[in-house]
Length: 324
Image 1: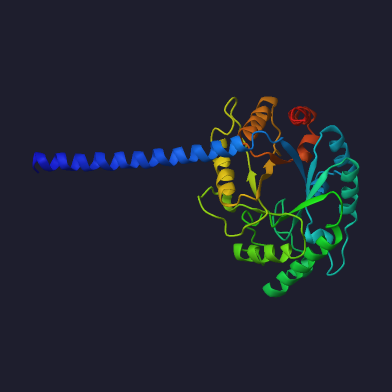
Image 2 (image 1 turned 180 degrees about the horizontal axis):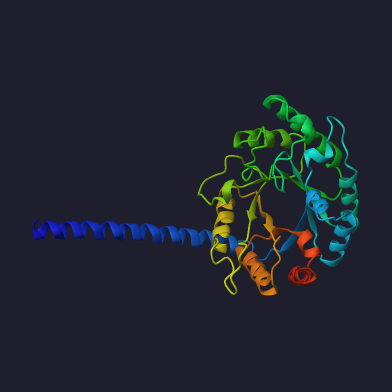
């Protein structure tokens, strides 16, 4: 092979690498620009901390509404996210048992706490498919009709309650992968259920972002808001939180990307799992990480862990009090 041909190949390779580097630099610059814009545009908004409270998780840990009241008396949460599990509140077809949910609404109102309600089949707490036994034998069309009837019943029951703020529709639909879920909903179903739910209420309806992906595009469903979930690593490295996880700017870019295409939609972190006992330094790193993202409404999950860990509870209390 001639020397000239070798130089030609080297030149082609260098040209390719240079072009690739330019594309990478442009991509990083766009990511940084959108992230910085989102963070700056929301910088003056107050940080809002909410609590995720699951009645199933509470029952598994022998916790009651009194324990929730005790927690709210210690930590100044102003927002509470509750589930409306279909298999709990409609154990038998057309027989509804909302007493526990009503008690929590009343408790929250007494402490001036706003409530978000999860709606649908796929809600928080494993497994994320909460179908009653009586519905398991139904075909898909009948199953979805019954689910819609249940959602409508929830809205009729609670929509006018003064401290209800918004709904989260099928929040775990993209995380659900349960073999026992006979009629797991799809993204097509989510669009249909969103339009159905929207016809029943004027309250904002939040949906989850598919895989938290920050792709630069408009969402298929133009919702009132979009929820992002975060799951910390189970093995936090001292002084290097999320060392093997996603940098905070990734979530900031996700939020900025959503705002570019859906300017009127709210962006929130619908759940950050703090269900594993952690030391003070690790918890402080978690809160620093969350604040760097720049999303101003964040819901914390893991109350059953904190209530059995006074040191962890105290750190979380101080971190949240610092933003009031």
